[in-house]
Picture 1 (cartoon, rainbow, N blue to C red):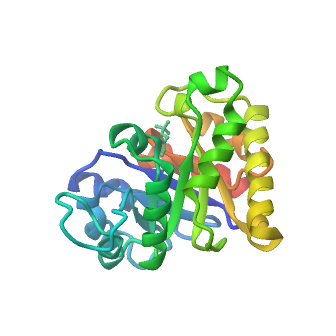
Picture 2 (cartoon, rainbow, N blue to C red):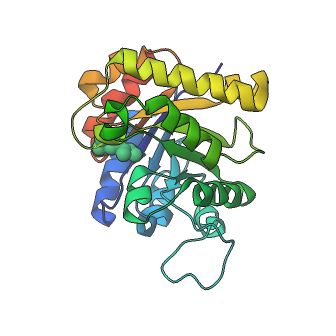
Picture 3 (cartoon, rainbow, N blue to C red):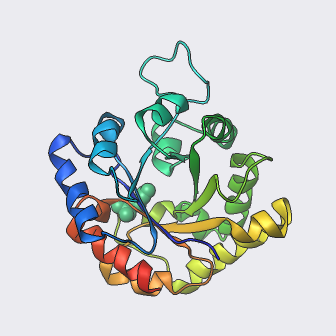
Length: 249
Ligand code: 13P
């Protein structure tokens, strides 16, 4: 059985004032039946870890440098995230691919560095609208999976997030058939590359305009093991019903 994961990505949002949302989230779910994760901005990781203490709520980073340490002004090493109390990190989010021109090769190296630091990595993949309209979605997904994932990984230290770029922050959501097609395809690729044991145990999240109002139908799709949520993870009152929907899925 794959343990379901409700993950929130705060992106470049939040100051210490927003820690009250984390407190409200933990209070609303004293004994969650799914794994809960929030990836706040790096400046909040240490205080978020304190806020989440003695609760299963986990805290993650949003990016790490591919190098272990060194002359990379403004960047964050995976070991620093780990030291700050993070247990997860995102890798290859489409906003990093766009804003920082990150490509699969770098994402694979970042992922390996994060694994070496003892972090679990959520590797993000997804097609643009142009790619979908050109019927290239599965080719793009196959290429990103092949290029972004290291050869050596485990189902414990790696999670895939399928986030169609055109669904992120737009309110547009693929149909459940479209989500199912891509998630089933990812599952088959994982099994082919890593074998049944790892391939069938690795979690695959959906991300892109997940809200309380659409969570039930998304979580009912085959091979959807949870969600990576942006906007609706910023407020406990929005994220909490998504967690509950996942618990009930
Ligand atoms: P939204 O939920 O705001 O569409 O963002 C999704 C996302 O990019 C999570 O990483």
